[in-house]
Image (cartoon, rainbow over all chains, first blue to last red; front, side):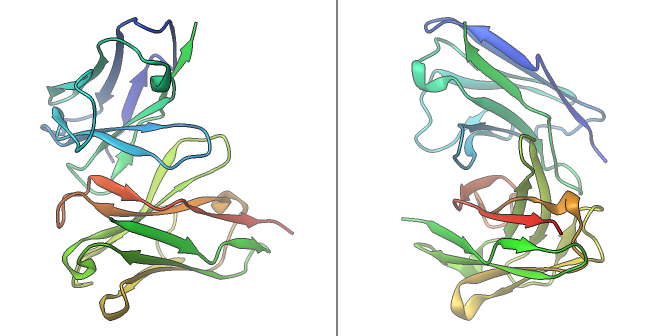
Length: 107
Length: 120
């Protein structure tokens, strides 16, 4: 099973700051990694798939990078609506797995 | 507009059974792999099961294998999850999710979730 480790667990930032979230895989997942955003009481929303492709309707301030075992989600300038929990997920191998999440909170 | 609406959740005793349904609309259901993902209270996301468009390929997480059965009815645009021998650790919100592309395993569309509580 591919284990995804997200860091940090919590990121305390202010609106306008740059956010950098990390996801490390226990083995190579090539570029088969996605990022999701989840707000309280809501279903997750797909942000980025296959490491660097933004999903439909996702603002350009969200960008993904990486390949193999190391991946990054960058939010270039935090908007108030971006404070949420972010999860990575791999589709390289079964079982599909998610990381434990990074909470981006208002400082 | 893609819509996924789950139903069937509720309170069930340990060892009991439950069947979840997901009604799909706004897309050609028979063209897409479908999935169940769950989230225990205060916890992260956990993939549960996936079924290919034709039902030929089915995958389960180890935590539910042998107890849960995923199925679909393409004629009625519906996805199901039959859950047997339920345990306390199965307590979660269960989401139905559609792949981004036909079998991409990127979860592009989600339902609102249906809560399942396993407790005596």
